[in-house]
Amino acid sequence: MSLKHIVILLLGTGMVVGCSSVPKDSNQEKVSRHWHKPAFVTPDKTTENNPYSYFVRDRLYSQYEEWRGVRYRLGGSDHSGIDCSAFVKIIYEAEFGLSLPRTALSQANLGSEINQNKLMPGDLVFFKTGRYSQHVGIYLDSRQFLHVSTRKGVTISQLDNTYWKSRYWKAVRI
Image 1 (cartoon, rainbow, N blue to C red):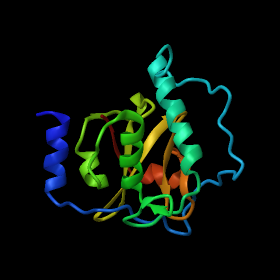
Image 2: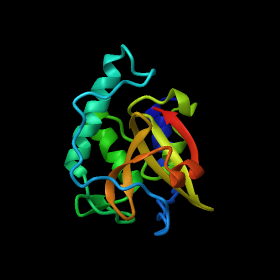
Image 3: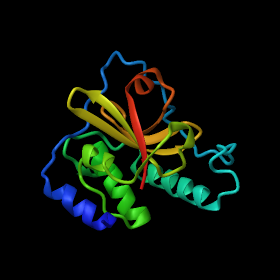
């Protein structure tokens, strides 16, 4: 079954599961408002000698510059407010020409599940943030991922952050 057929099948199921909020007392790291893309980042072992990974990472940082700080809005899908799964869907369509399902749970059912220590730029990372809620982000590099935070909007966070580490579910490569 092709990716297109899987996407159509998943969209047709009518699953609606959005992103959940991060508690206000979470131990989220403070990200500088004056973030600058590093001129050079020591590559992860998975990206060494892989020009495509550098290309993907650079495209994702470019999207971050465009979307940085756009506020979280459940069900939102534009620069006035966006949720995590819509953000991933929009980035994948814009940068990779792939149409993904609208919900985090549906996106989690695509691709191949991969081990966290094999992450490459562009892989999707998933978290269980509540009994029935999931959160999705896009892996960048150096244990960082791009996503939409309910408090900070579009931002970059660390997989090793206490909050995210305790809620990590899985990663998939599309």
